[in-house]
Amino acid sequence: MAFGLRWGGTGVFLATEIRVQFHEWLAIVTGTLTPGALLIFVAVLAPQLIAVTLIGSLVYSMFLIGQRVRIDHKLNELYHASPLSPEAYFVGIAGGMLVAYLPPSLFVLAILEILHPLSILAWLVLAACLLAVWAVSSTIGYVVSTLFKDMKTIWPYSALLTNLFGIVPPVFYPIRFVPTEWRSVVLLLPTSGAAVLVNGVAGLETISGNEAILAAAALALESVVMFVFGIYWARRMARER
Amino acid sequence: MPPEALRAVDVRKVYHGRGSPDVEALRGVSLALRRGERIALLGRNGAGKTTFLRIASTLLIPTSGLIEVFGHDVVNAPETVRPLIAVVPQEGKPFFHLTPREQVYCYLRARGLPREEAKARTEASLEKMGLEDVADRLSVTLSGGQKQRAMVATVLATEAPLLFLDEPTIGLDPFARRAVWDVLRDLTRKGCTVLLTTHYLDEAEALSERLYIVEEGAILFEGTAERAKRQIGGTLRVSIENGGNHREQFASFGQSVEEGNALHVITEPERVHEIMDVALREHLSATVGPVTLEEAFLTIVGRSIDAE
Image (cartoon, rainbow over all chains, first blue to last red; front, side, top):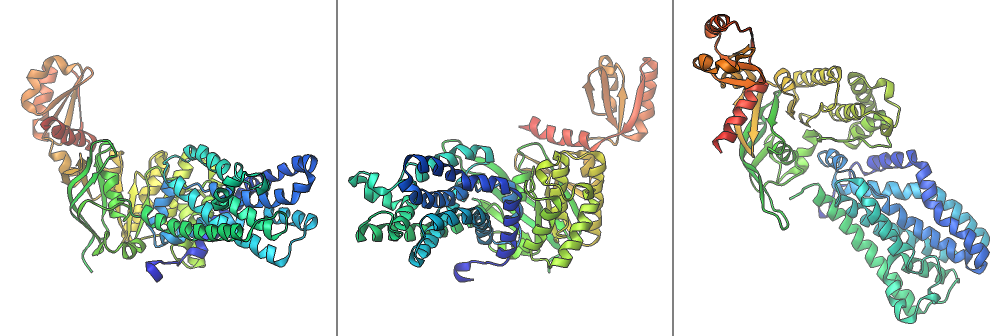
């Protein structure tokens, strides 16, 4: 009951969300593997960047999956007016996305391991970065979707956010292509920060110690702050003013 | 334990618009539901019914006033109230990518019911709502009425002590509506209390023991359907074909309303034969029937609109 949070029912609701996600398995597979299509272009045009692109596609997919959060307001009401706490509801939704994301991502990871084996440290950094991106992205997806009454109106915003966070910054390409004056900015973004950190630890590109610290600190802070905000927002949604 | 399942005292709700004027959705609503009662909240669109239901079900904070559910304040103790209630939201949709069977079962499990009990209640609820044949189809493939039945089945399976149903039978065929009525009657026999909103006045009459009529955020009427009908000046309606040209001759018998070529006169049973005598003299055909709740509703709400 720390901070008045109640987690009873989280596991059961998480199981519900996983069921929902796996009924949409084709959407998950295509959503997660679509960035992998870039691999074909990269393999042809710049084969030396293929490992960077694979890591980028993992980060991008993790961000994308959060943007697939669709909250139906009426389902919100059904669950909020029940013993299931809003925080359990939010974590269940976000967790369902994470679990659904794993199987197709394992496929991408297997290709990465074949083409560019990672050290244990790089694996740990990759896992931590993906979890941080998940925390940020699922909160953004949840909060954005609660702002609209009709789920269809969310789609353009999801696409906009995905492009802003996943395509424009150096997620699929190395940070060395970014002008020096912009490097600090892109390191502050959760997606490009995560990709650059993993690439750096995996030896795929060179970043300074200060840049690594900046990216790691920003990502850690963003993930914690955003996840706490997601819980706060869920509680707020259960008690509108 | 208090005798009331729900007690609302002077509940007000003002929505503060951004750049638009404030809207006073509830203007001092007071009402009470005794345990085991079925109560209908009637009103025009935008009258404040859903706002009241959302406040009572802990989803919305009132601007002022008090609402207690089984003696617990919904504003200060929502965590205590929530296990005691369940809500069918207006135009609610089930999870599109769950089957009705999964939807009901998962919801019961999320509310803390043990597996076996959740399974048994799921099957019983699907059967009562006539959803056995589509129980394993994804909701996205169901018709609108089937989706609505899945939502109702989900909530009624909880057997929560206090059920809020916001237009639960909208879009349902007459058979499905009656199935919902039967389940609600059954649940109140078991001790559940039901507060529902509906625009089907036959449903309100068939189902509710008392009803409240809400208009512009205030309660205009509280009582039984019979009492509502008596409020409009009679219990019978005499409909006179082509009676519009003879309105003055019938004016003394009671309130009269023209509808197309017909003139409807609301009156008491003892005056019916006098009206029939006049109609016969004028060679007009007339039929007699009971006043409906719809007529009472229109009159009560209409009076309020006229008064404004």
